[in-house]
Length: 346
Image (cartoon, rainbow, N blue to C red; front, side, top):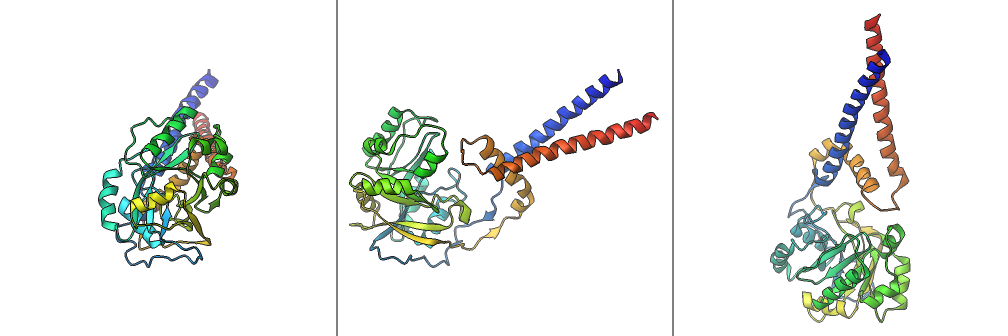
């Protein structure tokens, strides 16, 4: 009878404890996604920055970034801050490619007109699915469904719709996608035949060697392009720039750039050490307060909610340590309660 009472008591305590642990895990995920950012940025953060000029023998009129994000998806900057950051890094054109949304369109159009003489801002979208990521450059609307795991026909339909709008399609981080996804990715030859215009041969720091070699061998049909994939100005979040896409245009305008992109007339400018223009911004004290939750939230998101097979095993240790400590704390607390109860019964 005493054993049964102890078992019920421990089971009840365990249920409460698991709820508490679950709440901590859920809070960590929510803070990681919606919590205060590490740094506080503002529209004037880069106003005193001198635009970077990469050393290169490539002759160009425009330096383009075809891949960047804002607060409309998972970026940390507003549209205006995104543009100011790009100007500081030496870009004179940027495509804003928030994930699966054009809700940014009105703001992009309004602000783009203010920068016509400094930086051409082009509407884009990152078509993000489990199977493949595309950047659609130069589109104005999107009325097709964006499936989580698209069929071949749905991929072809999306590519055709971009071309109907006189836009271009980029296969983003191709080598990384092929290396990490669990879903079937169409072959390079198939994608080229379907009409993919560019391969993102440099994404941030990463050179897609296989993609680079494929484009080199098929440069009459497909072009190469680079993207920072910038989510925030931090170096591990796209904020350290290693490459620019160089263009020679007939006019410094969106249409002038799109004309060259449709002809696949691009060259690559690189800096092997990477450059970063920090700008003027401050550490967010609220982030410091919640920082213990952020790393756990990051692990829970990418370990449990992602199909990325390239997930770093050392990061999984954080999750295992958390579970181990949780179990040890529970055992310790129960042991203390049992010890106190045994002393009372003497």
